[in-house]
Image (cartoon, rainbow over all chains, first blue to last red; front, side):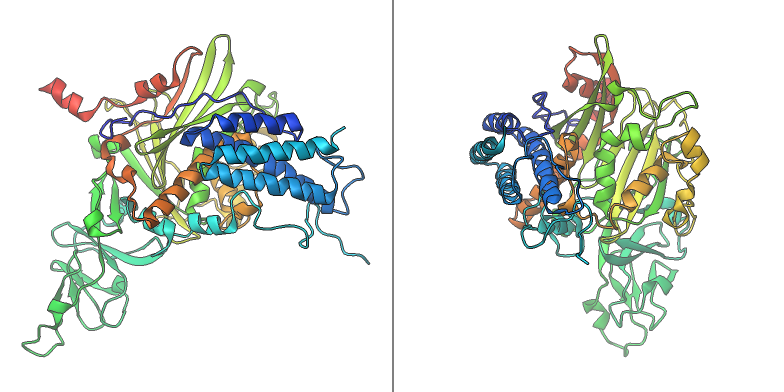
Length: 126
Length: 434
C-alpha cells in the first residue's frame, strides 16, 4: 500500500472464521488451536488473541466462581462444571501462556498449549 | 463471622494476578504519556492537536495555559501572528510565563523581564549588567507548532524527527466549511480512543427508541461481526451487520496514530474527526472537527456539545450525572442523556476511574478492534524503545482519509468499499486541473 495514497488503502484484510467462543468445551479450545496454526499476519493474530481473550475471560470467571463462597451451589460455566478450583486455575494459566505466545507472534507454540488445555478440559468433561 | 469476598472475588492465595490478558505493566506502558515514558515517546513522534485557533484570537493577546503529555506549557500569538508554545516555567527562576507580557515579538516574564520569541530564543535580560551576553546562552523550552484547520497543532518530539504534517481531508476547505471543537474529558486518552474504535457499543449506549419500540435493537444490527485491517496511518476497524436479502451494512472507522479517528458515516455525509490529546495521564482534550466531503454542502450541525468557553468543561458532566433524565431514559433513549458525546463521556470517564484497570477486564470476540488498537500501540512503544521509528508518522497523505458507512451487496469486496469512500489523491486533482 502506497504511503502517499489518500486513505492509504487496506492491507492484511482477512474475513476470518465465523467463530463463536462462549464456552470452555474441548472442541472450542481445539478450534482456536487449529486457527492459530494457520495464523501469521498481524490481523490474523489479533483475531486469535481476541478468541484467547474470550477463553481466558471464561476461565477467569470460573476461577472467580470457585472462590466465591456466596455463589449459588452448582454455579459454573459450560465446560468447567466438573473442574476443581485448582484445575480451573491450571486451565486459566495455560490460556494465559497461550495468549502471550500468540501476542508475541508465536502461534504454533500457543496452539500446542491450547491442545494441552483442551486435553485438561476433556479430563473432567462428562 | 466468616468473611466473604465480593461476588466474583478470588482468593489471593491461589490467584496469580500476573496472569491477565493485559498485564498491569502493559496497562501502565500504554496509558502513561509523560516525558520519557514509552507511550509518551510514541506521542512525541506525531503532530497532535494542542488548542483551538480561536483561543488565540489576536496578535499580542494574552497567553493561554496548555497541558500536553504531562507538560505544562503556554501558547501565545506574537506580533507577527506566529504561534509559540513554550514551557510555562521561565528558565530563570521558574516564574509562570502565563503571566507574561505578550508584546513586540515575544513573551516577557513579569518577574524579571526576560523575553522569549516563539522559538524560545532569549532576546532580552534587562537586569543583566551592560555588556553581558548571558542571554545568548539561555533559551526557553519551545515546541514546534502548525496552525491548520481551526487547530493549533504541536510536535513535542526531537526536532530531527519532525514528521511531515498530515494532509487531513478538511484542510483543503475554507474555514467556513468546517467546525473545530474542543472539550475537557476526565480520563486517560486510551479510554476515549477505545470508545471510538468500538462499534459494538453503538446500538446500546447510543440507542434511541420510541414508545412502541423495543428496548433492544433488532438482532441483525446488534449481532455484528468485527474485522480490522492495517493501513499506512494505523488501522481500519470495521463492523458488518446482516441487512437481509443480499445486503451487508458496513461501518469502517479509521484509527489514525497516535489517537485520531473518523466516525463512520456515508460517502456523501458529514464527517467527524476525533482526537484524544492527553493533557496528562488522567485528563485529555477531546478535539472534534466536522466537515462535509463535498465543499458545496453545508454542515448538518455545528453545535457539537455545550462546553464552558474558558475551561472547556462540558455542561453535562460527571458532577451533575451528565444531566441524566430518568423519564427520558424510560421513554426515549438508552441512557437518558442528551448528546451522543455526553453518552460516550459517561461511559469513558467512569470506567473504574480515570485509568481503566484493564488487567481486570473480561474481553470477548466482539472486542477485536480494542485488541488490535492495544497491540499496535504497544508494538509502536516497544519498537521505539529499540530505536525503530513509527513509519505511520511519515504517511502524511494517507491521513487524508474518510470513514465509511454503507450498505452493499454481500459479494462486494470491503476493501473496494473503503477505497470508494476515500478522497481522490491530491496529485490526481492537480493532474486533472492541469
